[in-house]
Image (tube, rainbow, N blue to C red; front, top):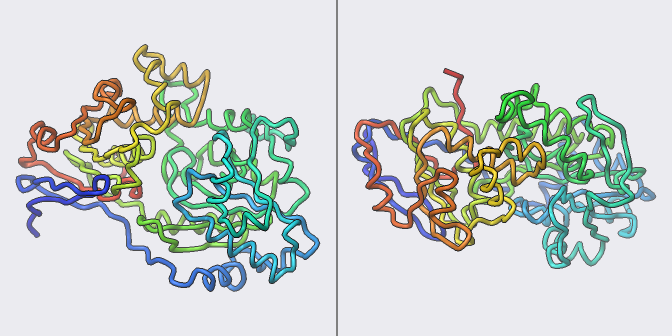
Length: 432
């Protein structure tokens, strides 16, 4: 098969074409096609009754006198459209099990994120559900958090009191996760509804205990031996949720699977499906990797788009070239993220992160590790908080003009990987 003359990739609300005709090889790295669910109501009912994983059907686990806490993800994960699942769940609990609305509470798993506004609360659960069921923000620094015990890795587990003495149902989206291997499942408990100190103790496990780098035991798709994941599991088992609902979405944001049942086993099944669909084995790494976030809104800001940069770094040879397409129409996206440029420029990033850990800080840290693998050329639209100088501090060469960027690259006799949805695909190869 001959190489394509060019590749067409999404960029913001448009697309860009890159001439790769002189390359030695051009290979697309894309996940398997996931088909969207056609009838969500029917699929949901089957998932919580006939097709539960390692669990009785939901109606056999609850009674009409139970107090129920439904844990949902916050607005930053609205891509999974949990509001539609929440609608089906609340209706099922009320009409099929006769649980009064006043016996239900929806708890938003904010972790260390800011609290939601009322408008955001309505959005994450849906306006119809919001009118019927009380929706509350988790507060990781609230005085009434309940101490559950200490994990074997020394994490003191404090959780929201609404997770105690009630039937807890988790709703989450399963995706690959930089630190925990996969998102969803037990992450609804830790970090979702845990205390700030609990979260910090857990997340520090992503750093190597002896070297100024990320732990080699963590990473996308890694669960066995992953200290962050195993610590989260231990904390979640202290809460012992009654049921788990795991959403798998297509790259375009449509529901593809609803995997329900035992909060642990059903989530593990969802991880298997995600890994099979979105992890791509590669025989060798490429000289050049071209990746798009997938266009708007996946490249709305760098904080969201940097997952693509992390993923493409798995596919490039050491010292190779990464062409990163992220329009970032809303700039950086998180002041906390770019604040870490200061310790980076001072050469104390690792020390500063260990002393004052934050998720945004670690994403910045991991981004810098990815950038160090090669040369990064980024096509973007500059803004006040995302200027050429800001990106240069991160060792990213940024351009607004595609031709100017491509003038820096010679594709002749180079191996090229193309990632049209870079944030969804995890390339992996056996260590050289």
